[in-house]
Length: 317
Length: 317
Image (tube, rainbow over all chains, first blue to last red; front, side):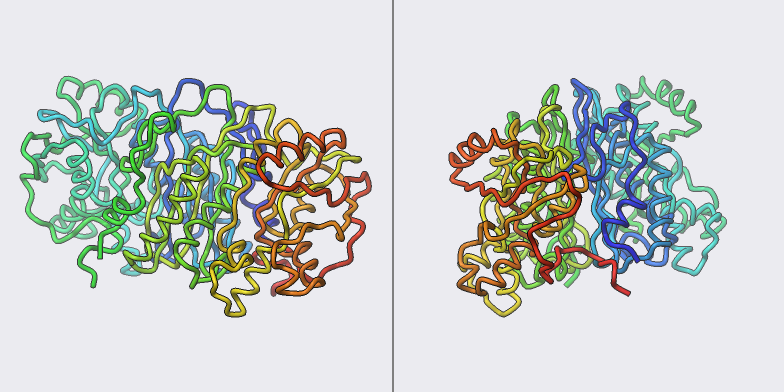
């Protein structure tokens, strides 16, 4: 067992960051000191992942670390921001060296893969939860907001859908094969940072699909003041989803399930080819799934019975 | 009852921030977009306050909101940074409108008092906890770190000590008078942001007293590679502390109790008068309590039996 400070020092403090990473002073003082790039906006977001709510309490610690960071980085991706720094706030029921070491490994590996520096954090005692603050940068005129969709734009998604919810369903059914494509998809989502950067200057609006396609499309529609026509038969389905759950359920999850962390974007039609070419260079498909309309609401889909993830649903007594 | 999104929109989303506050895009998109000042370092820190660990689960919600923000802002104060923005991550066991409204009132009031803008956040379900990320700015050469103490410097503290621990003790004994000076001190600490700014260019090192004077002095000594001689009879004791708990216990708590959120600084002797004058303008005393020595360790105090706050103490089985 180690004190809080030893835990932080041993597992969570990163290797000294190169000056190029813009970290003037890292973990170990009252604050970290960062050097933002001149003339850029700082994009910031925080997400807290709670055991038993956002991830299974028995998920592998390495996956918990990866996933908590991934869901926050996904918000930077959806703004077209370049990931720069993060802060981690880890709440643990007990000090468990092995758990924290594996957790940190998953967290740090994704930091490295995404070029993001862990600049600070804290460790506290309580119900297992991970809060991750992410900071990125984007030139002022190039941020991808939710508000830029215009009637006539295509609606398109990166990658494939339904895998997050499908993986959660398999985990809940007792599947523990971490190499199962759906389990992997659920536990280790890949934030689409490179895609967000590639879509700067092309996409009118963007949002990441965390609550489910229909729910997140709702946020985008509301912010843009538009409606949407969806073509559900065109939804790109995650690898293994139809085999595991059948086509009907697969399509339900692609529409209404959460945890995919793909990007949903609106694209003026003349920019579609360029957007596809840029994402092809990242080996990432971009699939048109509908179009933006002037009429509020969504056409083309029936209620699925699978609603997007929402805490405290309005109908809870 | 309201959905997560309604809760956020109703209570946590701030009024539209003036452009002067450097918020280009506030709550409601995937990220907030901030406009950092050219040529300054960004000082960032995160602290999570867990019910039953960092504050009493039955504390008034307004105080929970105030306190969670105050402990994070205290880290900016200790760096000499100007507070700019914050993000809040609120975890709640159930949606309770009245509780959230009062919580938000306490949080927003301190934001306003400190000139800090709430730029975003999230609300999740789980054990009551509040994570607050704070962001401030400081010119690169003017940050007050823990590492700048030199032998021969005075050690000085702002305000008075022991009130945080004294207030917690009274709360645990059943006292619920929110106007009791110790209770007030514990539940509603004032981050010393103005003092941190005033001490730029004067203090050699600074740290905020959150874990207790001896513990935080230990962090400062370690970072600076120095020792300290303390004069415990000079410790400024919080209002009401001796009356409530007697002098011996008062001095113990001033030395070893946590939650004071005053600043401990090192000062080259020739700068003491100027530092006192600047803090006097803020109606804040600055008391010399010892001096920095070249010999590692601390002289002048006996072990108090009250150790600074630490989660997962090393001797826990």
